[in-house]
Image 1 (cartoon, helix red, strand yellow):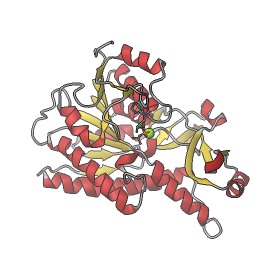
Image 2 (cartoon, helix red, strand yellow):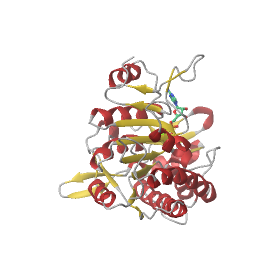
Image 3 (cartoon, helix red, strand yellow):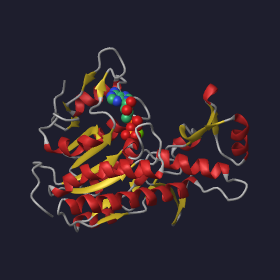
Length: 327
Ligand code: ADP
Ligand code: MG
């Protein structure tokens, strides 16, 4: 620990980094793009750590898995394709390494001595989750129909997206438990900055005494909401590319949501203000964290994450608290 936190009440934060924290503004994800974007995110996270806040970090991996799948597809004739679970494991390793390098540098620059570690992390899902019967989450690149047919022949599900081509779809089951969460907590308790549950964690199911990988993707925001209480986080920050969630987003008169309570956010969810697959899971994850006793959940831009934790509730970002405004 360094200086006391100037962020009253905030002592341990789970920061979930979105896709834009891991790729260039145009969405491309070369090694240089990822290193640059994660370097920026690491600087903002280091600000929090240097203020004495314990930080556990999770991250997405959509563009990175997309790169690996494309590599698999092109190399099919000469190298066996990796399963989605292995792609997840590989991206946890590369993103974890990049964050470790970046955080080490940023923390040293702030005179803060905290070890950083990255965990290969599995997330338990139910083998009977209805999502397995209805794969809807698109992954990887759009491909011409002839290519798609080849992979359908290998047992994959692909969907026709019209003019853009075909894209693989997989199940997105609900995360039940992040298996490495207690380990992450022990590490955080001893002062380590922990990176874990990348890409929502590698999905596994229980078959008797054994754990088996499954071909699925887990929403990283929902996994973060499951993980946060187990690692002892009082605050959940979902770091993305918008300053706040909006009412009427994309419409003629959008309204920023600042500090908001549980009843009001449930109303706004029911009114359909948060798109499925993007802001929807973020708001759902933020709400469920607070429902389960979390102090505050914040949705904001990556570059504002430390500022949002520091400032008065709701000045920066959308901040959900149990006793927040109801209207
Ligand atoms: P991440 O990669 O950080 O998880 P997502 O793209 O999944 O980011 O989610 C953030 C996006 O959600 C925003 O860029 C915005 O386009 C979209 N979005 C959908 N509904 C809303 C809303 N009501 N308010 C703000 N953003 C919204
Ligand atoms: Mg997302």
